[in-house]
Length: 344
Length: 223
Figure (cartoon, rainbow over the protein chains, first blue to last red):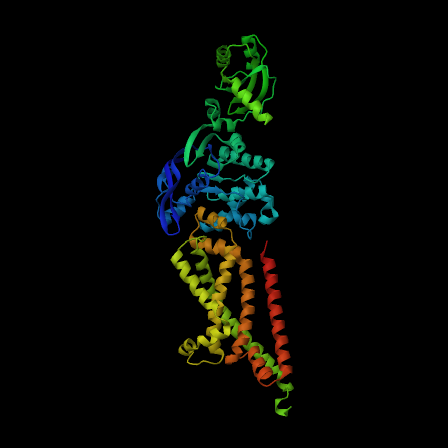
């Protein structure tokens, strides 16, 4: 479990020798990820993601705020305490960052050797870790002989070497192809389930969040502007984060239909709701675009539906609500605007 | 041509052998000093820079300035300029001992820069891996920075040895002994073209062997 509260990072803004005030990169970040949970921090470039990552793995000292792991605050420690605190947080770096002159096994062993573990213990753990990430057969290969995905598996094994209670994945899948990304994310989910480790994923890839995160935090200009369990965020509103997590494909449909944006607003939407809504309203309902997927034990979804134009909006909304959905009609003006945009 | 100045053929193998031995001794001794002092200096220059492990601008600028000082003079000028120091240390301004000081000064400054360049090639992210994993600064420097820079450091060493062989020949002018001394004394002062050619061939051969060996070791170290 990791609890971050009020984390702030301020850099002095210098231009030449003149002091030009300060730049606040992180502004009071609060964030909690429980044991055996995967939390994802998402945000655009420049939102402060990498600074947050460097504060969490204690490469940077935050200006204020606390990072509590297993009940111990890891900020404001002396240099000696800092070294052992850093061992509680394993970091999986972007593009793995393996030492080029060490084999896979030696790379995994490095943090344990630096921590002064006895040889037989190191060998045993290296074997177990390589086995866990499915890389035993590559133990004596050098990084240059491994693929990007294999290197990242070794990087994950290394990050687990000192048995950290928190694993920080800093853009670990950026630059990997989709299949490899899926395999690496599968491995992270496995670690969460088997070892009960807390995983914090920092990423700009929404697909990563959708596929493995339990909770999501949207970072923007150094603040968390929205957060919550992934399914809840998607059901709660039509915010930018919600739409990014569950993007509805572009809809194309006959112009005489009134288009509605609809989302699953509860976790009790019957799989056959479409037929039921059509029956309740007494009209056929057109599905113009849809994305429905599983989230936890229930479904989340976002759709563009088409209803005959002569229906009362309030009646449609009421029927949707009854089935656990929430929707709103695209107003005619915006539909016309869209057409104009397309024409232009 | 006076008979006295003719090439002393019977003595040539002995003269060359002794000269080679002296060159090896001089360069070997100087290189030991160069590595022991130059490598830490180079590490200090890099690690106090903004990209290093412990950025410290005043320290960086001053050490960097000192290293530049040793590299700004042509070796012949440095050798002359440093004579008072040599005299103070060894009580003499000529001979083997006298050559050690100017060669070490030039060599240490050169190797400090070469070391700085070699460790600069190690990505900063790799140092962060060590720090984030709880390694000490010393462990990061020795276990990651130097280890990853090893091929570059061996290439730097090769370059430095060759430069020192060249300097040792220049130091022949102050009686350092060695191949350069032989070339200056017999080849230049006594106009003995044969000895000159022999010295030139010996120098070419040594440099080729050093470079070839260095390249092979570097290739072995790169994975």
